Image 1 (spheres, rainbow, N blue to C red):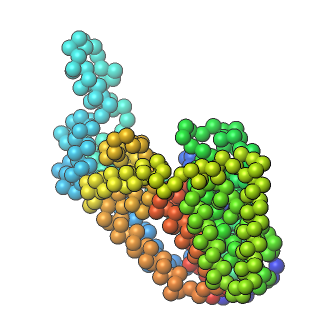
Image 2: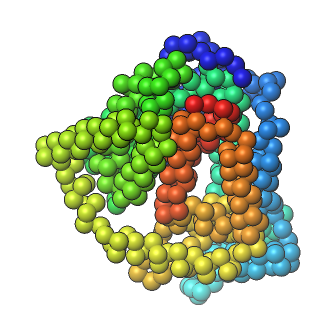
Image 3: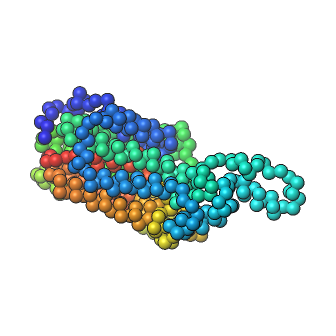
Length: 485
């Protein structure tokens, strides 16, 4: 174990690789949560460059090998879904995918290279006798586009959305590299302090911006960019629940760090007043965002930190004071700004709200989808393309995600993906519980990750690139800790 560094924010302990990595993690939430291609691809490029700069270093892979094995196998499973298969083989391994291809792509299974668009044009023209003398818009021998399946004369991959699956693979690789880089860097105490300080400052800036936006926002991103119909931006995020998820991670982690800073000043990432202000701002921003899950989870997280902290009486006073300050600020925000509308919507949406009914209906419909794709999955990233077949009448047929990250992964990868997901979870818990010694800051980080993990069971936070990157960054820091207060 390296000696504890003195003072706050020892930036000199960082190299170029660390700076690129932190830039990717800290800036991506500000790019609309990273939901646009240019945003997460840019972050992925920074991570890949950072990993390249550390190519010759010891990444500590041996310690986390049992977590990396299922993670790499999950990547291999996605690549296998992209492998084109002959129709006879595809019919055996994924009958439903074969059926969909047979009804969607004219000429599928004939052994000939087929342009689906041209085939549909031929079929449409054949149904109009007057069009006998009308030439096709283009010759069928000149495909409009060449995709993964067309190169093998009618062979098609298991995934029903090859382009989306490939895009997910390209993003999954930077996420895996980021986890390994944070684990590698956080083994050094000085670098870990800076990692935490940068993330905590980012949490504070996001929370402050969210509160300002709630006060004078106009339903446009950064007050100027309109969003799609049906969305309600909060801070730099398109969806308030996804912003609130960041606060769920931040509040217990920073609160535990604040108490540790009070007891061990030389071991603190930031001064106690800044950490306490960050805790209050993040807690308040989570409340004002109007996410019920965030309010419940952050409140439980704070209570858990208070229960686990040494010197419990002092902690109770600290938490009570922070809660009182947050309540006063919330009262002012509700009275003087447009945040009152968000709080009102929070109370109007009860357990039986329309959103909850649609979520439950979607989960029920997803079971029918799972029955058809339980062996191979529909394809990583293919949910939004396949689910409309199963969507209940009158529901949201274009549901982009299932509002349950874990069930969605199982739908897209089948039983093999479910097994790998469970393997990763068990390996991660084993690394944290068995291989680490628990101080209060470690417990706070565990609680924050648990809050984000629990919220993903009723939302799709891990599908938001910025939140996924923050999650793997915090997870990498956690598994690198050994014996810390």
